Image 1 (tube, rainbow, N blue to C red):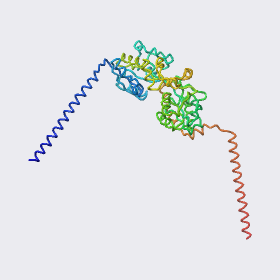
Image 2: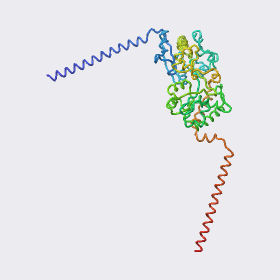
Image 3: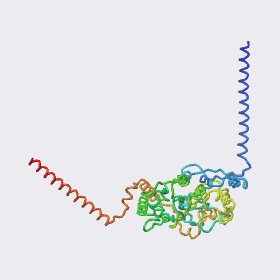
Length: 429
């Protein structure tokens, strides 16, 4: 009887637990449905689908402006925000998927490609009155010469970062120092992408090649490749994101990289400083565009206009640590950041800079091929091939070889004479 009672009590407890679990699950489902319904409605009067680089808009950390939240609050339009890592990834999504976006942030050369292929919509600037804050310097660029398809978002250039614990401050003046044998042991780093690496090499060719040209010949690319191969004898490695670990961790002493990222490196390592390359540099920018197949064009233009508000542009610039083309925003940016030539270089320097243009597929493919060959070239072979033959050295080596041969013959002759004499003595005995 007691055993039966125990069994019944056990079954009753199990049933109670199951009942509570079911009720709890039902309650949770009810709460989730309520949240989803609220989120789906949320008082929004529309939506805008934004496709941007990762960590490329102020998220509201550390008291900063949450740009997306502010836009949604101000206009009651839902922002569906998605990230990509490269221009090529974004291009493939636009051309090879059913995804539809309303605002994208392509780089200069990709704007040109999208424009030329008819993949961008013309902007109605009556809906973007804050365009008035964009500096004249950044209007009507080569990638959008009539300024019909894009609004500049950010800009930067390539500079040189170096470690003053390894290299004397002020001794680095330009890209040419990336080829200097005296810095080999400090660790020299180079871009691990063809466009940036080839551009620097082109500037150092004799005579120089304009990296901002609208087209290149295969001979131009071959000359730049030879210059990169020449560098291999002093180069530590090719890098992209690894540059942060190498430079911030004092593992390398010298590198070419993007100015905004150099600012970040310097913030994490007080031994780092920079120089504006005396040769000039690549001036680049990302822009806001609307794809031709967008579904919410007016909302997209509203979003672009919001991004051009001085307070918003300043918040984004301070977060991504790149320059802003928004003149009104410059008055609101942190003074320390604004005073740095990495973020706001003088106009005289910008006049020395060039912009990339979109290259034909066959030329770009050839550049990629030759860059891979340069990366895999033997440092030992390249250093020997590039050395100039010194006639005096050749004569010196020849004379030394002749003296060695003569000395060897004399020794052989003496050994033979000695052997003959010894044999004569033996015969007399």
